[in-house]
Image (cartoon, rainbow, N blue to C red):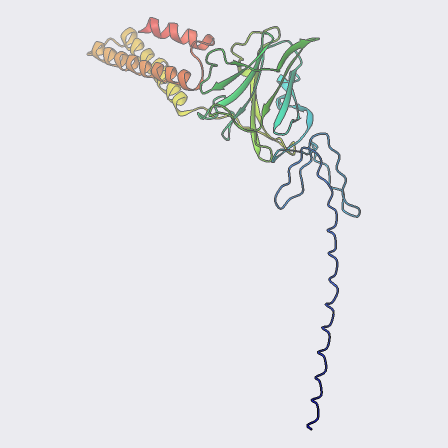
Length: 326
């Protein structure tokens, strides 16, 4: 008989799979302080009142010159006090500014003046001091008769009664006036100017004379402006605009008429009655009369665009002389 077949050996047992390494837990990250905002490609923001310490071994940042930085929302706002707003020491009346972050997206201002008066403070636009923002508008807060109001100013006078500012303070204590208010950094309407920390901000101010607590014309010594970076506290002096062309034309025509032609015509009529003197006298006088009317027209246009009508002795005297001469 044939031999029985040899049985095949059993297949080898499969090798056990290699052990799977346990995942390494991620390193814990420090929690951001409440209210802070993480900035892309930047360090996280520090909420007002939160303390932040630099990592061990890192250099300590140098403090800002006039302001300590704090993060508010996405903008960097500083904190400073007693910044002088007046550059002319001869007319310095102790006008000072303090400011600090307010909430997550706001800023608080406190403007003080060392006498009893109405007080105005605002945010303007352009490269020179301008109550109208160089025609683009200015965002102005006033302290008058114990009430704080907000105005959108496009001319050289405040239109209407403004809007009363809730939570603001207009106070006078010990011959010192204080205007305190807070506002958002952003412009919430087309009739507001945004606060732009990190960039130069044109800040304008005005006040009345001592004892004048009701808002009225401020006069030449009661107005001005500065450029201030509300992040670093860096101050730049703003330049007042030179006389506009319309004012130069007013001066030119009035000097030519009243300083030259009209007196010359009178002298000819009084001292040189020779030949056709009367015709020459009449032509000179008519020319002078027309030129002074043109000068008055430029004066009215200047007051409408850059000033206010009949605000001082010059405008009243000019009005009377022109009326009588005409």
